[in-house]
Image 1 (cartoon, rainbow, N blue to C red):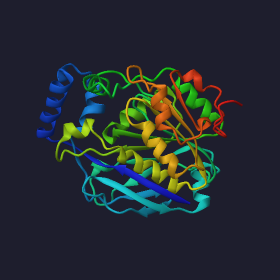
Image 2 (image 1 turned 180 degrees about the vertical axis):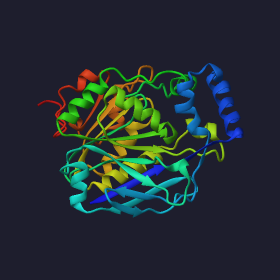
Image 3 (image 1 turned 180 degrees about the horizontal axis):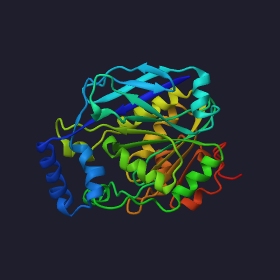
Image 4 (image 1 turned 90 degrees about the vertical axis):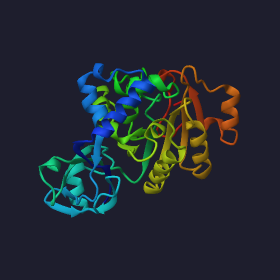
Length: 324
């Protein structure tokens, strides 16, 4: 059984220059008084941006009694590697393939001190066949207001995360019907722990997370807001190439370029994409003429634009048909 190991490792130390720079971004662009931010949010959401990347760190993946050597983290503190484990060992961890049950695997740092003593990796074993939902996060299932810079910063760093009404229940329903989930977003990976806690609290289904890594090299403020769509596209293409026998439902929103991106992916994988669903973001709605233009070459029963989560209740996720 192959396991794709992806992640980013950061040290506990926080650089003073980074802290000052982050404060400046929040105060000037977000109109936020940093000292007024809830200490929980400062620790969980802001501090990860201040930590140094753990470069060239040797890691071992612990699977039961077996230890698997991984390649050292790169210059951005990232690890991205495929390893293999015996099928019987995988079954002990995850149950049968396709059970979509998450398991936590320990990561060891043989040449490091206690700073990295509690690393772990969440993992999910999918069956070779089935349906997967690739879901955006911001303004698709989480209220972010990406198109309003000041509100985006405030919603990210100073306010409790809020779900788009009805979306947690819809995703739970789909999960009960056998669907697996991959959360693909341009959100920084530094927000992962905060997002995971929120996902658990809202009871979103378990799934793989595919975020982007921001470093403090170059124009950090620009990186926070202007992200090439290609970053997200690479994540989705990799999922399609990794799970060659699975079919996919792509869920996004009208606030950014999800519709255009998903239409482009459909052209390359028409037999693999069973449905494209775009949530209309208030103030950034996708007009009928615009949707017809973007999805011009895609059959009408393979895409839909929705405003409320309840409109998805009759979607047959096993085939992508709207009516059962």
